[in-house]
Amino acid sequence: MDWDKLRVFHAVAEAGSFTHAGETLNLSQSAVSRQISALEESLHVPLFHRHARGLILTEQGELLYRTAREVFAKLSMTEAMLSESKEHPKGPLKVTTTIALGSTWLTPRVKDFLSLYPDVQLTLLLDDNELDLSMREADIAIRLSAPRQPDLIQRHLMTVRVHLYAHKSYIEKRGMPQSVAELDQHDLIAYPNEARAPVTNINWALHVGDPPGGERHTALRVNSLYAMFRAVQSGLGIASLPDYVVDNQPDIVRILPEVSGPRIDAYFVYAEELRHSKRIAVFRDFLVKKVAETFPSSHASNA
Image (cartoon, rainbow, N blue to C red; front, side, top):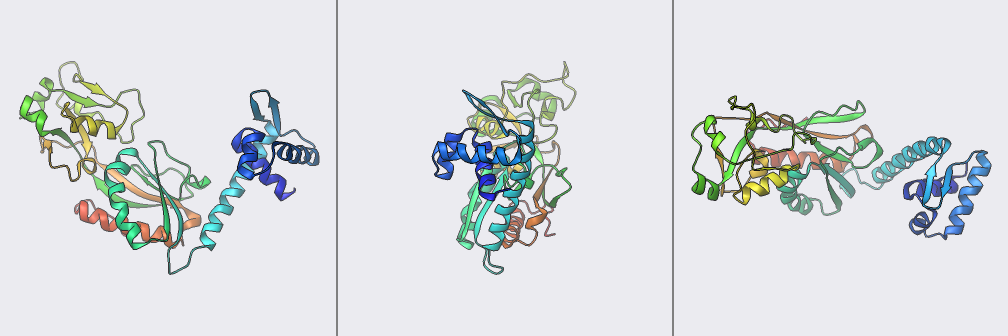
């Protein structure tokens, strides 16, 4: 199987058209088309269904694409490992985590990491959906639940609690709840029940204390922890938020401090192939240090 033709096939399968693949490869559309036709001829199978609106992989094309994607992901990982000095971390590092954790806690600390390791090209991918580390969609994930994939290395990073929070302006206007029952008279901000939440039991505040009807009324539901935080910040109402979201926010106060929501265990996760990467090691150690500074009782792990 010709390597150059396989590279062109992979680009076409990713792009979905000869034109877009040609732009990526700096080749003409006709040159890309000829390479694909030659590959199909050598394999004696069609790899794409050609339609006016684009290309669709055939069953044989899907099989080849899955293999090619894995091969190119492994090559990309190997290239990064080879370019990295054992003593001097350098090269690209893609880190993914949830939008709320990444926006409120991680991003403000990135400057300190890059001042220590200026030769690391850091990319943050904030997404409440889990990216596929085995396919190199990211190098590291900070996940709010233990990963299920057996080929990933996981290290417990921290344990964070969830509490009720409101802005001072809301408390001045509506008063401070003195009991769980008094939440029935307040404006609550919650997650939509039908949406997939980044943490478990995210709407516990709507049920705690067995309110009449089983669930408290909400002023707003929004499918983003970060958006819930911003709504609290605006003075809209009370929300259940992980403590890391309100870090360094003096105008946001904890409501009913004796009442806690579910515990969140965060994990530092990466692929087995990156076990000996210096970039992975220094970023992990940096995070452990920052966790200890921010949440001294969160049980960060140095493992």
